[in-house]
Image (tube, rainbow, N blue to C red; front, side):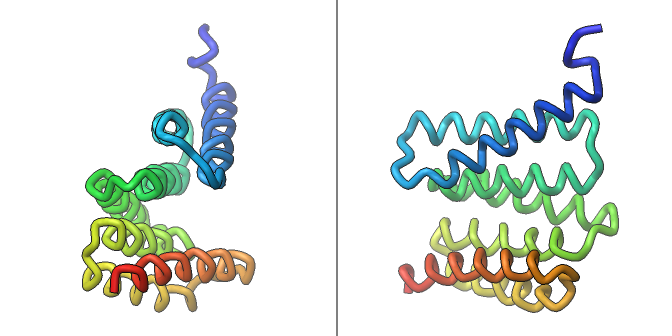
Length: 157
């Protein structure tokens, strides 16, 4: 059995890659090579979650793919992955902060695309979903992320 045949190995790679994507996302002076690595690692993490994870893991992996494409200034794939998050949540009855982040992903991707009207519509959905997020820490994280979308939109207006 190869390492990739092991569910534990898939989980280990999924988590390791997901966390390294966060490291890259947080770099202030990320260059084109780091953007490419960030995108590849997000997809690789998602791949591993798709092998052994839950629908919730898949939704979060799709969300991370959407976010990295936003950071790289690539709205079309960001919108594709945002739609995947929403579809996975809808198909699996996933709510709470995952659905709120599906809305956030759409708002951010439309903002990156320069579509202020659509971005504001999705932002309003995400704000409305805040009440359904059960954990205060999760609500605070979402509020912070929504404020960054609002900042993007204020630069476009």
